[in-house]
Length: 275
Ligand code: NAD
Image 1 (tube, rainbow, N blue to C red):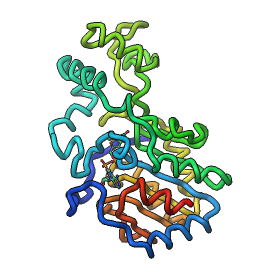
Image 2 (tube, rainbow, N blue to C red; image 1 turned 60 degrees about the horizontal axis):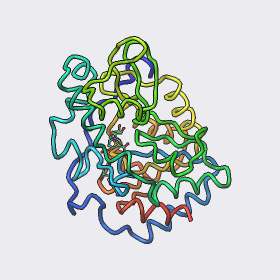
Image 3 (cartoon, helix red, strand yellow; image 1 turned 90 degrees about the vertical axis):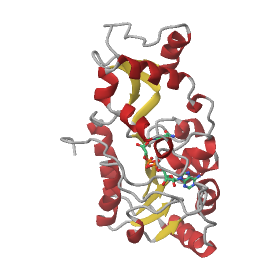
């Protein structure tokens, strides 16, 4: 895991037949099955992706209205070599960050439903691919949250590893610095998120896979399950004998292995299965 922990592009099917991004109405029988699985579980792991935050106004990448679905060139900017090697790309990235919907976004019923799962101590871990901080804003216990792809709320220097709040860097951009440099060493600053070509944090991966290997229920929410290595928590949990519930508007490569697949709106479905 630690050797090549590089997210790789999805091979998941794309295109939502409804074109809505929210999927069809969920089957009430399937909702009931999922609710029973949640009620019976004693060691739950939740894995979330960009889809849990679309109802908070943050587009996903690969859904019908995804950033990369609509503009495939945007994916190129997510590569570390391109960011480091091209000042224009960095300046555009800073402009995008300044205008990002992430800063105004608020948690939605999906994020709040995950907090509910913590109440009786059965949640082992909340593994999120999201960088928007909305699980923490919703009140999820920081000790249980593993932000495997980092956070947009901090910046990191690519030379000296100094970290600082994103807001401070954004203030400098707003004041006219197109590509603010590290105040400690002059190095290139970047949001503290894992870009393609960057290594994931080994400790985060170890926590994520240890939790998956010891859970009795994995709930995968709003993720195309096409970004690795984190998608491998699914087969890890299955090998450990865990049940699998998938809540996602579009099909995922693991649907055939799931006990229940719920293809409805996360904001509707998740509160219904945890209650
Ligand atoms: P993805 O874009 O590959 O897949 C998101 C899935 O969510 C899609 O299959 C889509 O159909 C589904 N979906 C979207 N809205 C939904 C809704 N309201 N109800 C039900 N389903 C819905 O996302 P991913 O698997 O997380 O992988 C993308 C990568 O992009 C991750 O590494 C993540 O770090 C990053 N990302 C994060 C954010 C964020 O922090 N909010 C936003 C965009 C991308």
